[in-house]
Length: 129
Image (cartoon, rainbow, N blue to C red; front, side, top):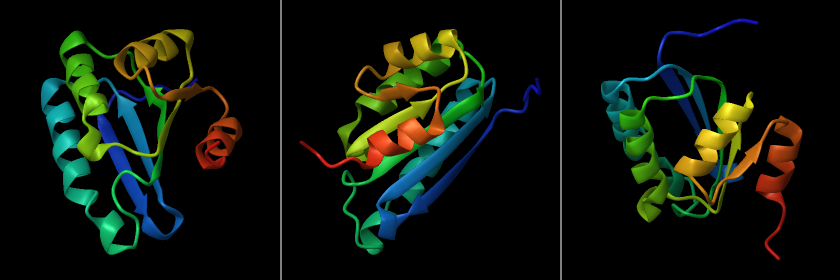
């Protein structure tokens, strides 16, 4: 199994599809978490310019290459998860381990957590009841 140690992320925003995909990699420090927070807030205004009000998009976090994080990083991410100004209609997190699943549920209790990408995508785009 390949292991990623370089802490990084990618953020792809697709306003016409009302979709954001975020890939998280490696073991982060506080500076990486802060940089991620700034970049996400900088890029999200592309949604309304593309016809998708913020909050109406679906977001997938691919954390399959993301390590279980230290407490300071987890606390920062939990604050972001609770911030409705950067929220989404639905947020799915793709995980690769039970420990990652547990940390995700603690950090972001309202998010869908999946180990299968197809299931996560189907859940993200199913109509509201």
